[in-house]
Image (tube, helix red, strand yellow):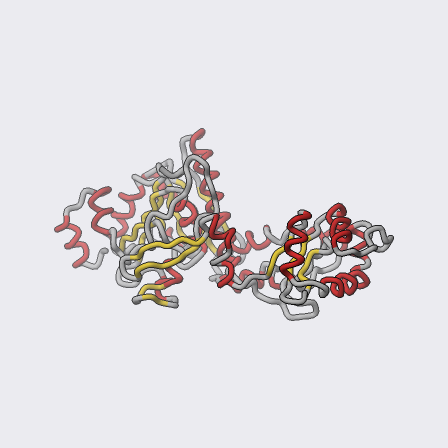
Length: 393
């Protein structure tokens, strides 16, 4: 029994931000009924690579969900959705603002059917503001939200972050918003709208870039792999491969110097983090030269014993076999009815009494249509077949 095993969710989302949010809820036990377009399904089903015709992209975002097909433009399709709304706790959609209202399925309509409904909307720019009707994809929001302007090598061009953080972060914030609304509902007894915008979320994760600009007036720029405020906090080349080192305070700095046999811990240029920042150009070559005296593995052992945070720059093949990653069950096998055995990321939220679980692989398009319509609407197999013939499902 997962922590959210009593929560039922209608998932009208597609591609990434919305499906990521509902996957988080699903991993924690919520029942997710994924509503997909008949014959086509979630757009991401068309994104490769494929295994036996099934999209790896789709499978990575839609585990633990049940898929039903439903034509929301058909009157009967709308009525079926309304009936399902009556028995669920949450509805999540990521259509452009106004789309659900045009379908006659906006929050004002649905809350009359279920006053306890949490209605979550994950969009590019939110339900309000001058950009609300614009379409958005991850790369566009990364560009507009500022994260690209501070990512990349020093004096280099603005660079997109390697994963779709515009979508993923919005998905996480959406899941948090849903959980907050569910908690509040325990006191008020009524639902509400959760409005999450990808652009808002990008601004929220700019971390200290905004405060640095507000305090200094200087526009943050890409500075490569070093930290803008902490020194040393970057990778260094060694005799074998680079090692990332993060000496995040003055105590760790002293320990680092002792281990590396550097008599600069109390040098007035480097004694405090502020001084190390101010004299970075002088300090960096000293450290870089010393790191070339040993292998990355030798430094790793020394720093681990002394409690200095450090680690290799792993490629994905090394990540999926890393002993810590494996020990934490962050790479798991799941059996898909068509694709067969696949390996996917595990669940990062570890709960002691009600742990999350990967119960099922991502669903085949419409696989649970008959089951859901029978279970919640009481339809017979013949009635379901008739709806399919009329392309309602």
